[in-house]
Length: 177
Ligand code: FES
Image (tube, rainbow, N blue to C red; front, side):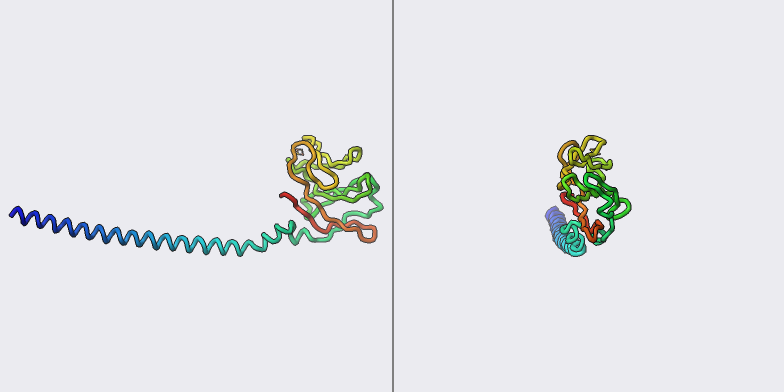
């Protein structure tokens, strides 16, 4: 009698073990399939995002976008004597910029919002530099690189062309973003 009971309990234990085993196997399979499905989705999404952003990456590598390639008249050269500068907007009306006829006779153009906290920079001809008066930020007139003070990044360079005595903005270059 006792033996039977024992057998019955053993039998039940064996059934439970089988159920647990099958359950665990199913769970393992589920995990495996879920992991596989997740990886497939993740890889697929990454590839799709990568492909979708290629045009932006190419533009970023070139350092400009199509809008910034527009040719915009800035000023007549005769209206900009040596040592003077003139404000214009490029590539949009929200982007102030300076065209400078340097004391050395060069023409340079940069967006004029200081790369520190956006105060307007101006041409300081006695020192031949671009100066931001807010926190005494200095930029090199030849390349727009910060020279002194808080700014850490260059001013965006506006590419210019002179055609029949008229200066045009033709593009913009962001250097180190
Ligand atoms: S905003 Fe130009 S130096 Fe601070």
